[in-house]
Length: 174
Image (cartoon, rainbow, N blue to C red; front, side):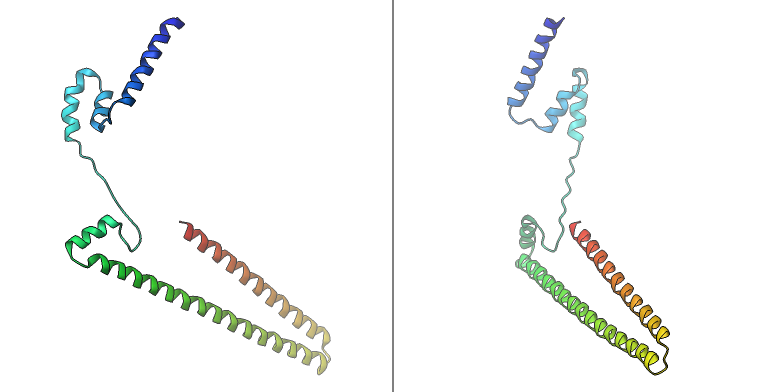
């Protein structure tokens, strides 16, 4: 039984090796090779009627060189105009990012300044209650609650900033 299987395996391997060494096969040849002999003639006419579709796409402001060349063939200077448009768009985006980052830094500084002013005012109020009205327990409670609120706001702000940065880095990876 084993001896009868070996010649078939050798023949199959030789057939596959011959197919690999043949000149490049067309898709039609490969399809016809898979179809049984009685239906090959019918399949030839169907294969000839098949249409191959190809889709190309690109992302970004600059098309691939072949398409740029086609634009240039349609209208002289079109490729240069497309490249200048992409450069202007890039400069505009960078300018907006600079303004946005500068605005965020300014807003952060303003928030820190107002936070400092509020903390100092609350400390003065607590001191006034303790010193002038002899309400030290109220002043301590007032100051403690104020400090806890400020710490919670500060920590939650940091957490939101970290989450925002993570979201932005995920969006850039896509």
